[in-house]
Image (cartoon, rainbow over all chains, first blue to last red; front, side):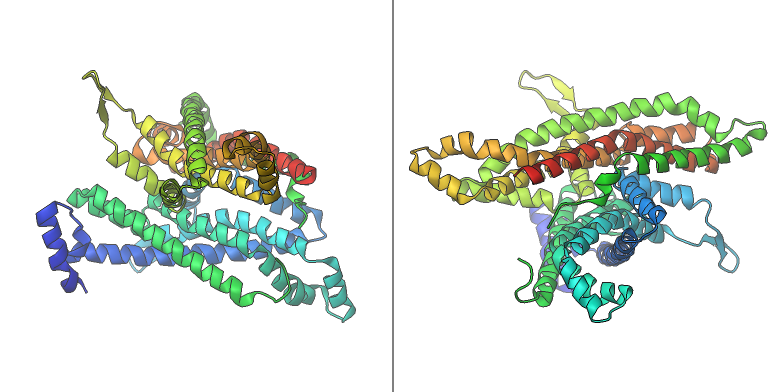
Length: 248
Length: 266
């Protein structure tokens, strides 16, 4: 792959001075690919964590216990109204300092690395939006549908799993898409705790080869393509699970 | 769908109490380790509070300036987006989508590295552009794109019957926009606009990565100056989160109330 495009980009550099070093230098190429791979892994993990938190939180908000509802709203408000970058630093440095160390056979490593903390911190941040999104979806499911399920002998939990949640998911999917896209963008914050995702690895390249504008172009391109792909996948899911005659 | 948020019913009490609990817990934890000779983490934090608050002032200045810039440019961009002329509409769409779909950090990096650090004025004087001003510009770009999108969305949400009846009353396009469409749009635009202000303020600590001395940068500097002991980390970052919370939370409550009022009003 690299052998194929390297001559073109080398000639581009020689003739125009545009230095796309990852496309002809195998070391930089490795860094770029690694960065993209870590970034995709990071985004996937963050989205998964935030969705799980969203579902659990939305379920907990329907709880009869006041203290649980109260705790969920406090969680939402705290994480939505404080800077995500400070949350990330707080988790990584603050909580990371007091998490136990694991014996790796001779040396000690923290039980959760920077990647793990980035997933936890940004996942929790994104989850605080997802709770509200899922909850608005659950509230939009007509009470008569739930009553109908109840009259068919479904238990409360089964109503949630088989009736309320599938309908709620379809209702809140557009809002969910928005949040997932914004989470994918927020994942670049992991740069501050040195997770080797794309922003971090490209910043390594541009400080070595002093080609900031070209790498910026690459970075913008990467995110635009990534977000187009996510948006396309979400639209596909939306179309796939759409119920005829239900919703807008 | 009824905009019936549980959270809006709780308003002040829950989070403020929770934040208070956090602070109390920290106080309790800090009070225990103050017995040794060195000053406790809490005492150190109190010493450095004015320094951190000074940095926070810069955060607020940056957010207000960036929002003003973003609003003006975003509204212009939004009008370009709804222009009937393709040659104006397409570039505006392109700019809007470029900045809406890029992470804040990437835009910030681009501005920090690509905008020169000094500018030659027409008279020949050289003026240094301070970092925080560049960061402000960088923060305003994504908000600009979103304000533009909000305007476009608000104009599109006005029923087309209004355009048609204005036309039948011999209003020109400009007159229709100015006297009929925009007065209705402002109501719809206000809550999302405030939302974006809150989000912008929450993003300003990112400038610390690039060496701007705002709240986060000052907090880190203060921790280092006080001897970078690990027990500083939690109280200092918690304090930082608390001051942001105190400023941003009233804005989000206000936004939610407005949203609710407009939703029931229309």
